[in-house]
Image 1 (spheres, rainbow, N blue to C red):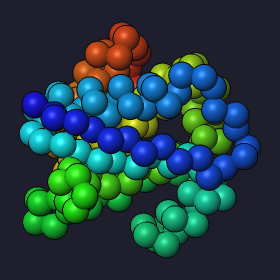
Image 2: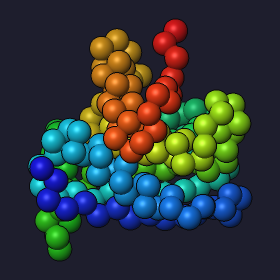
Image 3: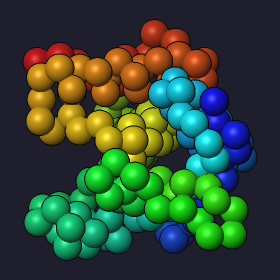
Image 4: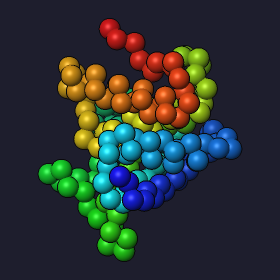
Length: 166
């Protein structure tokens, strides 16, 4: 069981106003993902909100993709072991970067609320930090999607499928 989780939330954009309650939702989402995975010990994660320009530059630099994206994850693991915060002993899971401009685009495209879209992207990012990778496809993609939906369900976003199987 998770002993303690520290969620650091950073806002590096001015394009989209962050509604009241989003920061608490991010923390609840991180907790739900860790509980679902039966994560042991204390953990630390950073969630940063950015604009399309900022996430575009990160996507180009780290993934060689010259387009803005909705979420990027940067795990802090080597050989399945996370770095530890020397002061707290917490395992540093890594960073999740979310474009709030993309969040609004997805809200319009999929008919989701901002809260639901942010929750989905945080869950998605958390499962990447925990070692899941949907880009390989197959069973792992399906497992990751199912876990994301379980987190959304735990947070009260029931029957709100995030994806459509092709």
